[in-house]
Length: 200
Image (tube, rainbow, N blue to C red; front, side, top):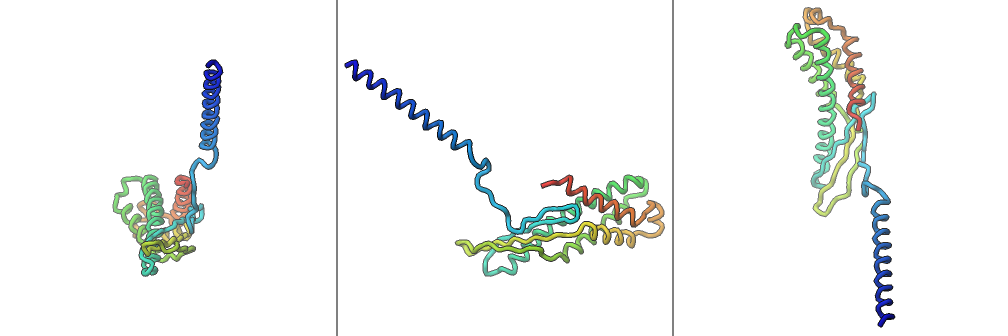
């Protein structure tokens, strides 16, 4: 009887040891490896640089309507860049207005903002894709298009500064001490700072 009890006790101890070894192995397996799980790189992945605003547009739709799918992917990319550029530009206009003094009136600030917004819209509407990729057709007959666009910050600043100069009257320019070259330089600096302030 003693031998049976000793055997049962030994089997119990061995079972606990095997169980604990197994659980330690499971814990070790769970703690090793990739902490983010499986990851993928998006096709046509682009990022802002100090020289360019960049965006990748994505759109899914019927594989029978590839033209529309590509058009909407492009529009998605354009809208992303439009938001970035206008955010950076309006911040720059706000800074510029505070340096010339708020007593100059909101009418000039509105004119400067609207001139810049119009040129930004024109530039964005003329963009072309720097990259286009397609997914496979899924079970529902849908396809996804990825489209990247990039826009020069320097060229944008130059065109906006010219538009603002043309929009303001000589009297308005004198009131705020407007200098096209200085305005362009401030805008280029603000666009470059946008990259630093919004790192991905």
